[in-house]
Length: 344
Image 1 (cartoon, one colour):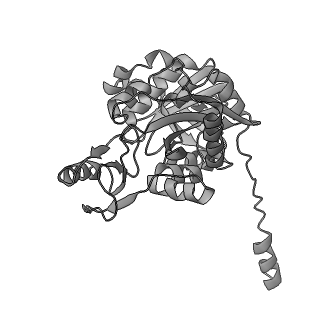
Image 2 (image 1 turned 90 degrees about the horizontal axis):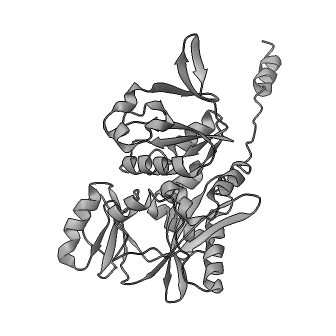
Image 3 (image 1 turned 90 degrees about the vertical axis):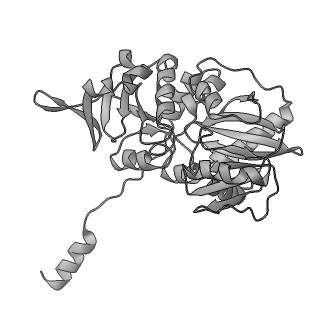
């Protein structure tokens, strides 16, 4: 199986996507192609030996072959026309906008390209933290209480301090702040509004237990180990940035079988058929003995490879169980019957 890893994109998480792609270069034991999306949304074919962060920050990637995306795949210029980049399927590794908001998923589906990653509907529901909470409520998964502020609103209507302030459509803890009193709120919201015009505010629970679980649906559900991330107050950008480069498996959380099963059952509800074709990570809290969803990571850093005992087999299992495509026959029977009826 040959994979094309697509990374970069126009997003506040652009650099994190590069770090993730570099990590997967050393993890995936398959033939790989690397396709980079730059700030102008141009596609470039990157040689594996050039998969180093400085190669992108310096602009050296522009010396590589530029690609065109169209029906059936990616193409580069050749001596006599163009040549297709050969691979079996794409791995969508674009974090944040473009990758997790559904843009790339829609393009891959439109151009009939097989890919691992969330489909359009799954992207929409997991990219926006407000929609995630609505989805969770619909499927019977608990979330923290919340309040939404929009368009430079600065007053909380129901939550008491301390709270945590999050841009609604952003990951990697970018723009996130813990606010312990009213005096700190305006500055925290100003920071968050730099990244989004919609802000989700939740209660901040000191010392809450957090557990991360990744998985996917193949012939049956495949789960990673459960990790209890080590943190101070919360996982900030720097900590998460370092996590995205991880390639070695982490230690299992010290939890009993009942909690592990409860986490897996909540994961199944969230994943259902909606996320088929994707490897996702769900981050949960345990509050007053109950499992509560914190967030869904539809394209987790480095695909959460460090949580799986055999990540390569998970990728192969998902690639063999992608959502089935529904072929629509267009035969113009309706138009032809009208034309025939009119005698034209």
